[in-house]
Image (cartoon, rainbow, N blue to C red):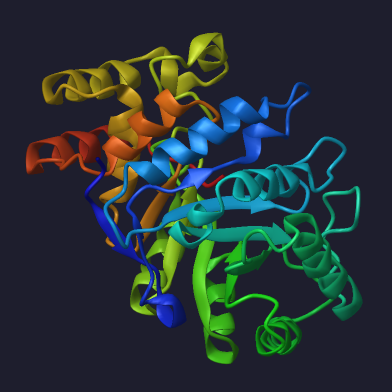
Length: 313
């Protein structure tokens, strides 16, 4: 059972979640979507591993289906239809606000409403939309416009909390002044840890906003299964992975668990969000939330990052 928990930020501070969340993208955003039986087991296994009263943070999107459709949300609707008692044991964050069929932001009031309504339609009332995030901000609209529209949707009961995705620290600061931001989703890993990333993590801590850290495994490179793709990155051709593997081995954990645990060590407000479509991987990821890195571990990693600085995603 996974025991380490976290609280979401700001207006969602009463929500207790597992320290490690569950990204669902790869279940459906792939040429061959995962079968329901396998996907359901991966989702259910994580929820079952949590103590009473602790929710699993699930992350989806309006466009995580084949052809940038709502296939991921439809899978979730089928899951909660089969396991209705699990709806209240999860916290669902969904990205949207793009042009249908394209990964292009459209922040108009009309499109944001269309997007949220499409998400709700795909969920079929089987699970509440807890938090909505514009996947990207449309440069044609300022943050005040987003605040007006998203706050309106909250008042209408379409969702409870507002999040942001792929934004910088200054945008977070401006947004916080005009709307209650509960979470900010950015990429964070030992590979993606540049100045902009650090600045977002810092300002979110100051403003009591959660950081949802997606791709904590460096898009698969920071695992024991990284494969030949590492050869395209110069930092994986020297002692970077060797040093990390040494730390993981002395702690008796996998390289993936070390990577997730390190992201979680960046603050109580930082929630690692690895993806998983297999129950075995879900459980491995969750156990990483219980890993406590010693001062020696953190110092060794800090020295490694001085030699091989992370870059912003």
